[in-house]
Image 1 (cartoon, one colour):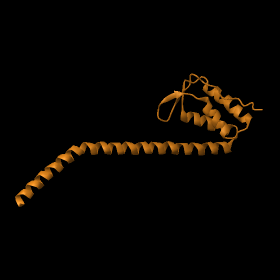
Image 2 (spheres, rainbow, N blue to C red):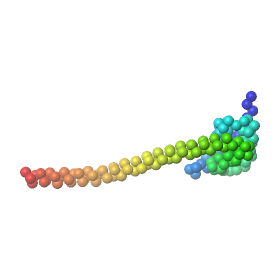
Image 3 (cartoon, rainbow, N blue to C red):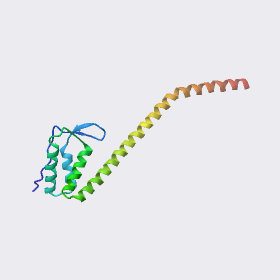
Image 4 (cartoon, rainbow, N blue to C red):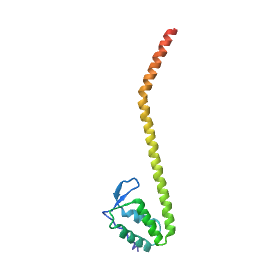
Length: 143
């Protein structure tokens, strides 16, 4: 029988993401993390109760502050293996974010190069046309 206390919705809490964008707090994300860390039911209940008490009266919090709260609570309840697992997940998640960001930057550079190329294209066409006219005149003089 599963008697795990789930962290409930905190309707007035805004989470400030890494990008600076504000979004609603989604309790299911915390519940999901705690379940994935294979913690005992009692530890999950204690952490959720503490988190709820810490966050219930706040208007906003950053994603990093939530992460730090979670790590501090895991340490408080001596779940050091879970701290290591969570940190590993966080590092991998940061790498995915960085990789996605790098792909976006590469796409933006490519699009910029394409725009510059298209802007230069009329100049190239004019230069090519002038070169052809000069070449044809030279050919006529030779013959």
